[in-house]
Length: 254
Image 1 (tube, rainbow, N blue to C red):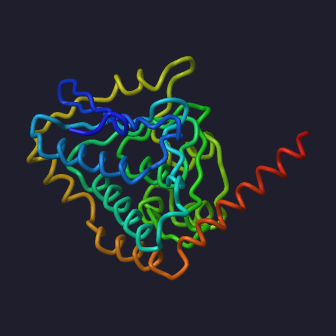
Image 2: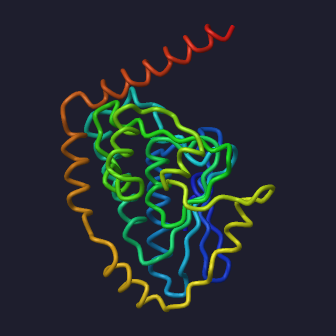
């Protein structure tokens, strides 16, 4: 189904588990990983015996966002296409008939945080950290879905400042929907989720009845923001700024 170097898929009963399998890159979203995730979710959607998809990251982090590796060799057009495919992935997770479960860990940042947000059940341990920095290089990606989860004011604060915030704030705002009991694990929370009691056709109808489809508007907003000239330069400037911030923090702590 997918290349195991990018996403690892396992089946158990009515559940498909998809593991982002690039721990050496913090499970950052390369073009190949995005396509592997799209392919895996499409396969789950078409399998009427499945009702749940669980998404998790290999290693320390769930997903550290957009993969900047080799960005110097990519054009604005290449980058636009990559972001369109990420928006397609987010829209698929938001609109699927399946119950989607994200298990956050470590850094859950950028497009990885958007992917976490798009899932129905959002489990995270206390050490999980979140950031939504995409607006820092001019992108509107996932913002409406974030606002649905946490409210317009909180979504605007997180996206316009790009601040990193901790587990407690994410729980209080509703970004994290389920937390382990004291001494418990995220897998224990996963194991205690109630079983789905309706068939696949009814699941699809219930989703259509309870969630407005605004995928075309989301894609239009993303495309408009990403197609503004200078996308690559904005991303490079943002990345360089982050490196400078880390250097100053390291110097201050020396």
